[in-house]
Image (cartoon, rainbow, N blue to C red; front, side, top):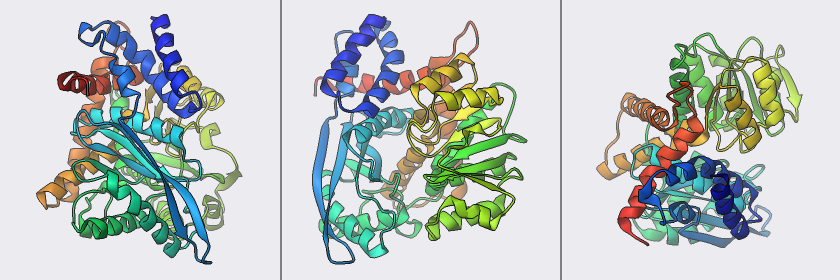
Length: 448
């Protein structure tokens, strides 16, 4: 089996040798999915996984825009349309200086499995630009978004590819992108998700990824007869996902003690309560400030520059910042400090070595493709509401989100539980469950 896995990975490395993030994502999937393929004759000789790691389409384009000083700036734009076997491409747009083909291919590949797990009819895609929104004026953001969409609009559509937001792309950016798409196409369609509620958006969409991450953690804890109430929780990040993960932890009776951004992290031993969280939301969403300002408002807290929060004592860790933020030494520290549950809110925030340690220790560990699928699930619900020209209530959307996260958890158990020991390998369960639905659809549609 090891020989089969390495043979497959060698071929992928030959084609994608300069794309480390993508190779990391493929390796993690291959190690659990290839043994499953070998055990099921229906997939023999079809090279399903090899077809899944190759994008159906990868678009790269130039984005020219004019800054406030009148100087012309040039960025790269991308859209990776990975797999459409079960529905139109669906996945976010990321605006960040680190964006490149490797990162977007890894995100698009993960998105295929994540979208499959939701049970909604959505394929996988991802896109974005190396444009950095930080420090830019609203007018510069608008001009960039309009320039970006003036090329992207050729490749997307409500039945073809429906982008959403991601790092650097929030409600403001979605609004500018949608405005230009509407002008260019002369139509009002649900081509983007994450829209404002007054013009086609869905209630709970901003909260969905963070809420879903916590709902999944709660489901995992319940398998041990436990729950979030009374638990101490460390969270990385302070953007959309981290904010609403913290909000849901508080609603369920947990205590959040950390948040972070690229400058470092804050720890508040008294707990980040509703009032303090509202301060963080205003700081990050409206004032575009740094998390270090928290200690000025709440002097009993401490700020640690250029560090991540995984050295703090906690019961539950929710990595909600970015990829590979939690490494092997962080995992060892968390385990030594008694952490019993890790639920990923970001995409691939834990390194392979960290995951190995979590699994050896048999703690509850949820990969992002399962635990953070609430965001894209609610995007799918937004697409449904757009098609119906109708809006569900906040409770209706939240109930559907909870149901979807519960269904994803059940699938992970189905394919990941060891009947002898009772241990649930959520990585294995998520990978196989996501693979099966897409693979069966690819087989049904032939070699296309």
